[in-house]
Image (cartoon, rainbow, N blue to C red; front, side, top):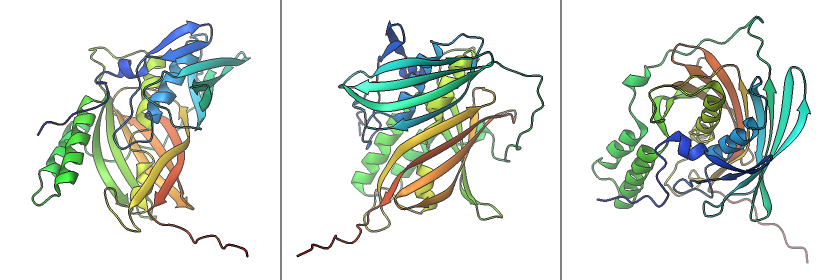
Length: 312
């Protein structure tokens, strides 16, 4: 069966992150991608394009060390996003930039990011990387979907969805491999781990500023979904335990290094009231703890609250 992808192919990360500079502090998206069964453009792409724009407006001696952003409205892939960069602060050790993303005259996204003059002589500490299978020993996400689609007795519509997911993953700019699913730690924490690697089309790695933009794109993959998995909400299902909605509200990253080929360690410390928080840790293959992430999103089961009482 032939599976058609409606979106343009994004097999290289540089295509997904590309922005066009149209004036001082003003940038425009070139291509936008909306994942299957999504409400709008992929949030990680909006984040990474905003960071590319901000990075172009900062002295290169400063490196991105953190950002915090809010998603206000879903973005359409049919209309370019305009990114306005505001130069908020120029300090000796830190510089701050704000980015407002606008589409059809409405603000859809806001980001505040900070850049730091590196201080490698300062002391350091990190949590160790968990023991998981190596990147090369884990199955590609697209192969997992293909295998699930070939199971005996699978519903025809579900099979088509799995094959479409497989094609979308294969054409995506990030190769994802799940290393573990919902592992319960001794303290009751449930953790999932993923290996992620950019499809760059290059033999040599990108420089650190661009690697950090790639990491931002990666960080939104399989992130808030861990909250719905922790709640045991089921995709492609019906009933009170079916996942009705999952959408990012806000997202943050704190950078301490950056490399390609990263292990994403994700858990959900709290979920309820139709929302969930996920925490993430990103490690290089050599075990360096490169970034800390956090996100809150809407996570709703297919359940309705009590009807409001009508006053006579």
